[in-house]
Image (cartoon, rainbow, N blue to C red; front, side, top):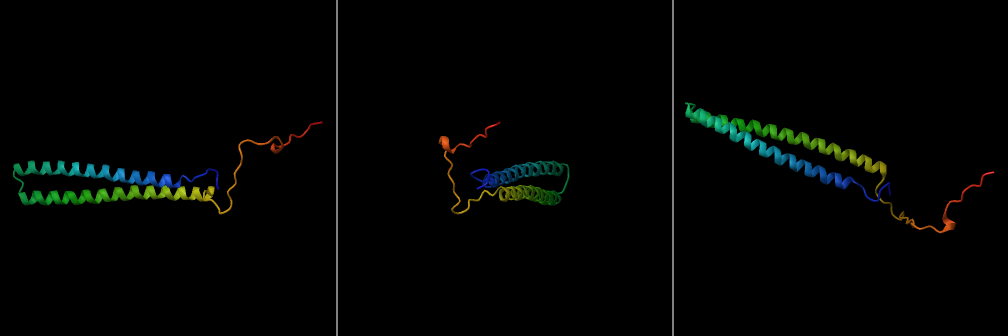
Length: 123
């Protein structure tokens, strides 16, 4: 066993998974709102004479651009989260949290007087 009874690695994995899901949800909402605003602007432009087919084309192009941006940012966040997990794995291995078979050792909290280290007498 290492310094602690359990490895924090699994907790770190759960936190990074939550972080990734949260970021993707947030970015997805931002993307949807951004697209709605762009479409509203193009709908207004249609009222001022923009051709409907051109408006539709611009809405679709805008959504494709947002999709690329969304995917890129989510991928970048995923890379950071994977880096965090890799670093935690390295610390986990260094601290040697994995129990070795037959190596369990119980240390009683209450020691007998004979078990205590002896103090050296001076002089």
